[in-house]
Length: 440
Image (cartoon, rainbow, N blue to C red; front, side, top):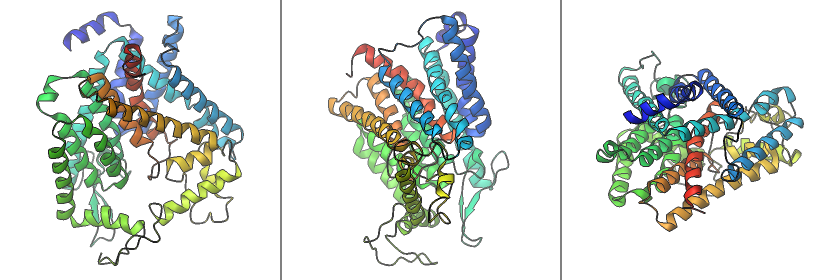
């Protein structure tokens, strides 16, 4: 890595060095400040525009990147068209018009990686440093009741029977579990691609998965836990001792929930109660299970999704505009108890805000990535680091776009940054795979 760093410092210009610095700072910014994160994304976008203009040639091959480029152009076109028909033009204007910055950020990350693979080492170590800091900070917060910044443990329920959960750098925002599960595929994909001896010998990838699960469990976030379990199903393909590791993971999860009654009540009983499968009394004594009236995650989530469908029916082709759900919701007959900023589920949100064309595009991307991974599984390419790295990164996209799970707003700046950060590396792997014609 030392020689790669020297080579980068000697042969790169000021703009390329700036891109590398910004890329390295982005992971820590995502864990500490949305303002700084968005600023870094904007700077990366600006730098890549300057580089493209200055080089006076095509920075990217349309032949190789035809599918990603067309997909991004179509998505941005749909967003702009939905803006024209938005129920609140002023509200939708900025998030719609400037959404292209996320595309440019990904292209900027791709460019610096393509220029010198040292950027991959820098990104990996930046991610690992953030990950280790979060673990250290979470331990301090759980042990002493507050973290290194003085952020206190959060609590559910009454003071006498409250569940304490960690939030680390995110303070009162429940983002910790979401953060670690969204960076996990990128970390593991980088480790596999770079094929670093230290990580292979010490089985850091398995340890990282277990630590991720532990953080998610103590953050008491259910959706990230579900995302982790789905991701682990894909990850089983590359493991040598699948049965042993799967058994250890399941045993660890069951033991944690059995020992920690409050977390079991929140993560298991609480979920079953929201699904209307069981009814829970104050003492958490369960009645008989009833599968005759299962809810879409909860009564509230179901009402939010139904409201989104109601909004979609009123403007089925182009939707009502980005971030317009709350405004559109006010015009429904049942808005008093279901109006929020978004429907807490990606696909109902896309239907409501971007219409059927946006929905079909997102569904197409999800199914296409899923198809690629199934193809990799069938072809059994587990000895190829390039393919396996791509496979793990695809699994990260799949869990981000999974239907039927509660999510934050897809157009939230922080979530958008978390989704588009790995895309730069994905584009790099996509290029190499297309050039080698390993996957057609």
